[in-house]
Length: 220
Image 1 (cartoon, rainbow, N blue to C red):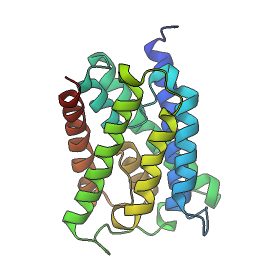
Image 2: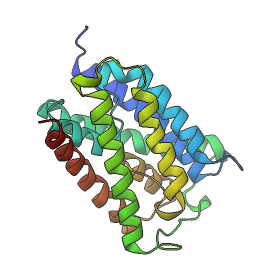
Image 3: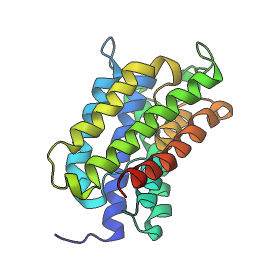
Image 4: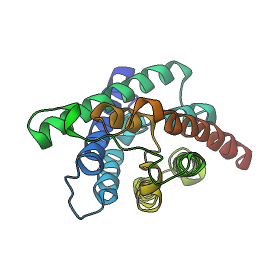
């Protein structure tokens, strides 16, 4: 198997995260999917990027996933910071490109910022983001990093299915981010306020750590 350089991995992470966040912002932010639930397009894009780029970078596309994979022992410490920085930058670019694509001219004021507490309580948002981020990272660790499932053809479908299920289940509760890079894109496009972003970042990062610890414990 060809060993890819860090630069090649970061390019793959940038492309995958860019298209994921671009799709999220277009469908869940700008409403470009119309009456079709945004989860369909988001899961399809994620699955395509995973199968296309997984062999290069591992297809993290998510800082919580990178942290979880590092704790699990399947990612070099030296790659963690570059991966996360690349994912966050890609999230911002994905948001900006979505605005230019759908409105013709990006404008923060053209999209109404939604409140996470409009229909939900704080504990509901935290719980929704924590549980589905935990599920996402835990599934990734099991289907994409475990020797027991090495070479399986379903890893991309399994991962995308978690995101799809989460979008359908708790999208109205927390915006169904499950990914700090996606949260950055929602902030950039003007869909989520910085003041409320901690309700995404805190449970997402905590879930990434705990999912890795749970994986290590169940695979001792």
